[in-house]
Image 1 (cartoon, rainbow, N blue to C red):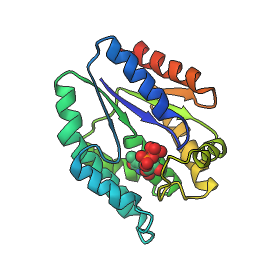
Image 2 (cartoon, rainbow, N blue to C red):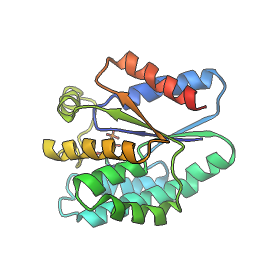
Image 3 (tube, protein in one colour):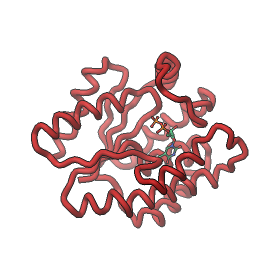
Image 4 (cartoon, rainbow, N blue to C red):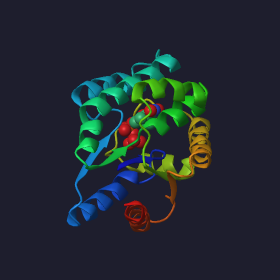
Length: 204
Ligand code: TYD
């Protein structure tokens, strides 16, 4: 079972997934929790290049290729082995982030970015994708209020960019209804956490 967590900055996905993972561990499920971009030493090095605020010259296709490269390494070293062992892999962001951010918001085109990612992933799609849906204005406010969270290169994009990200995610949910579940991330954090756990349990 391969579960991915998607949605904008400030949607509370980390808190909700922490809660769900703890509950699932109590139920004796074997879980591997990981994140993108990163998840292994090589993938983390690629992550640092992508998110470095000083890399203002980065071309958008370079950005898309780096995310795909990081994803590939993460699959090979961590996700595929865990799935082979029968574990449940819960990954914070995956392929759909590339489709939404690079394909939609950077306007490279969903299908162009999908093609690069089909090469990188050899067609490994999640079984379940939880989309934490939130108005980006609320998300950006929440990020500003959270002093602990480091601001990255993509956070610095304008509101328009984040609106495009949201709309592309909603489009993807329509395109892949069999694996998408939308979580209303405007609700309070405990309601969001419960909804997350229930969506995973329903699929297990
Ligand atoms: P991160 O600090 O992990 O953000 P978050 O806590 O919101 O998940 O930074 C990841 C950033 O990279 C985030 O702004 C989304 C973006 N991103 C892409 O643009 N494309 C991708 O394929 C992935 C995985 C992430």
